Structure formats: C-alpha cells, structure tokens
Length: 72
Image (cartoon, rainbow, N blue to C red):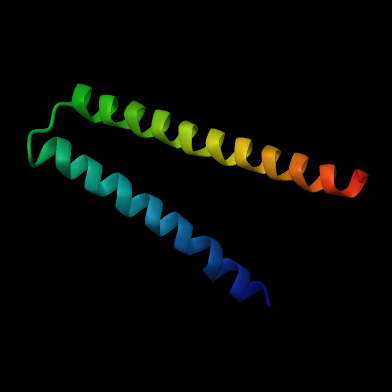
C-alpha cells in the first residue's frame, strides 16, 4: 500500500519539475525576458483568482437558494 501512495505523489513532483524546465527553456533557449514571464505569471494568478471567486459566489448563491426552499 505504501508504494501506491509514493507513486501518486511522485507524479505531481514530476509535473512540477517538467513545468519549471519548460519555463527555464523559454527564458534561456528562446530568449523570453524574465520580466515578461513574471508578468504572464501574475496575469495567470489574477485570472485564477477571478475563476475561484466566481465559483465561491456561485456556491454561495446556490446555498442561499437551497436554504430558502427549506424554510417554506
């Protein structure tokens, strides 16, 4: 059982290393400025926050709607 848990967590680590290697290749091999890379990263973080915020808002609205029907 412990081997199965080890292989699951290793997949995430390998994906993160591959992503970091791709970003390093973009900076080193293709000449992408680090400032542009960081700007794209912050745009990605902002978009992710918007999506998560909308999901929280949708969950809140659905919860209010379901509790409203329980009160009647």
